[in-house]
Length: 478
Ligand code: ADP
Image (tube, rainbow, N blue to C red):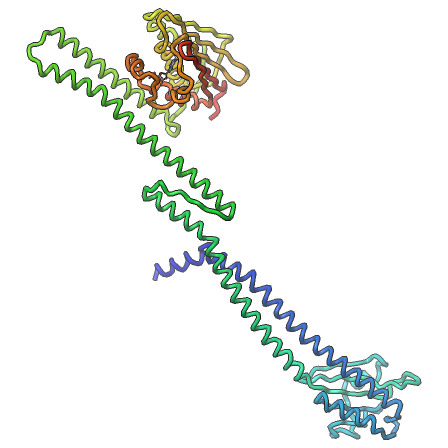
């Protein structure tokens, strides 16, 4: 029972039912009104025509009466026969009443000589030449009209003409039946049209629902292809874009997992080779043991580095990254970084230069920003030639501060410049491994800069050097 009710309310609330009901109402209500108006107008038109006819006959009789002196006691066959004929043709009755309210002529022959007291007759006698009165009594209409003396315009009597309206209503009934027939035809057409239209209109929505269900089941290859209403085309386009984004995220997640596994497998494999060869040969000199263990430690350090970078990256994930903002001197931050990196650069005789154009104070997360600039300067040293140089500059305007890290190093080929910010991407894998690179550094740097609502750009020429330009707002925009 509950399920039935649920189904019922679902169907009533469904767009298809509502569109159907609206279309039916919009089509039918005006039609029914129109039908009523047409049939009423037709009836009243017929009645008014009949009244005009009767009135003109009444005028003819009235003229005959005045010219023949019928009301002064003269007999007139013309008046009698005209009255009888008209009464006959219209299945009615004609009474001629004189000024004293005495019925002079009654085509039924029932009231002749009797006095008639009726409001219409009295009113008609007193009201002058235009005093016509029309009453409706069942299927009959009764027209009371004055008889005017043509010489002095005086009302000398009254003609009462009753006539049947049955024939009129019979004609109108036939017409109404035909109209109802046409109306039913139109109603059926409207119902069929509304039904088909409501299905056509909601079909694309069903298609979208099916696609969403397919995606929920994991089938991402399903794209929606909808033509027709522009709103629905927009929905399907947005939907397809959303599928693309989900698919890309899925792919990059898979790629990421496989990259991580691969990166961790390499040091594990070399550790296994090292320890296997130690185990397989007995009585090896202690120096060899030591050498192999040093190698194993190097691999462990590398794994630790990868895991640390991964952890930093997870922390920087846009949704979970918490920014701890404070107003600090960027000059000091860069000077401290360079101080720490100077010994590493010195090992390869690389000159570290810092140029600051002005003191800069900015709202930044100093831990994260240190990590970002550290990666850039470390790379500039790592991918440099011995005896080379690294130049770091700091400048600012009223809105942003700008840091450039320029080196005289190996450079990055133009076609690969867009890729270096991707996770685990390395231009020269062997060199990067040698220098302890994980391929995560620039990706972390870019995330940090984006979290500061800043931007990073790269200019590089192979074998000449690379320049990274960073722009960050002085005031943090949450
Ligand atoms: P890695 O840990 O390998 O250094 P990064 O994400 O920091 O990873 O850098 C990605 C790749 O971009 C590096 O492997 C290197 O090939 C290239 N790269 C980064 N910085 C520089 C630079 N200053 N000069 C030349 N190549 C660079």
